[in-house]
Length: 328
Image 1 (tube, rainbow, N blue to C red):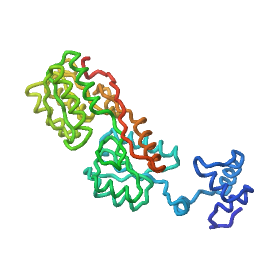
Image 2 (image 1 turned 90 degrees about the horizontal axis):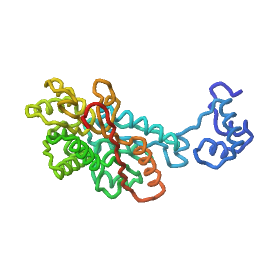
Image 3 (image 1 turned 180 degrees about the vertical axis):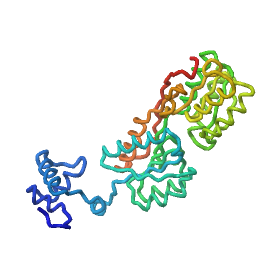
Image 4 (image 1 turned 90 degrees about the vertical axis):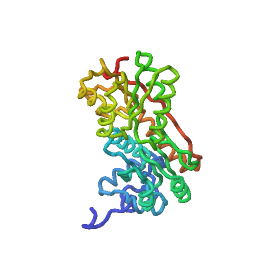
């Protein structure tokens, strides 16, 4: 039994398990070399004594915190809670934890100093952009950065994204092949790489196939997209590609308010495949982003940067998931 108010230490566990203090440390370190029977004795002794590793003390010795900063805007988008859940699971598998830093208006530069103060082992910037100057500052401090669902030309920043240009082209080919010719693109924010690439691919492929494309600004928001699509329906298109599924759902609601049937009068396809896309009221056909694979790639890039490897840029293909909102 330990004395009341006595904080159990790794030395206490080592004595109880009959091993060295370093063996205790290795037993609680993912990937460390320790015999299975030794780890079993250590974990049993730790459980009996109520021992928990002191992460702060370990970080002072190892000069790593075990934390990865997740800097994220657009948290109201239903797509991103699933992304956070995937990051939490992927980081736990490599013995790291998330530190979530919300960015309400998408301006990462205003919070990156706060992230660096926490001595994070790496930074993932999701649904937001990072200036080249801040990217260089992170590099100088030895903090690897991965952009998630964004791309950049900054040489010190790794990126993971869906093949957004290819997704736009796939949607255009799919709609034109089904007989649609009057196409509408509901755009996200104009300065986001995801929107730029999706619009570029969609418009280029549609033009090559002889279809006309109009563009309205939805800004990745339901209310803005609903208003923009409502105005566009005075000259109805026969198909819509929305840059995310929140705007796809807004498009369906606007069409129904206008007296149009989906998909009989208007086909709708969107990007992402967040939870609401599959709701029976929308049954939204989407290009699904491979979230699990994208998150795994982002974590791998952070670990690779910690080993001194150069930043890489990864694009993964989306997949067409057909539901009831489009005549294909």
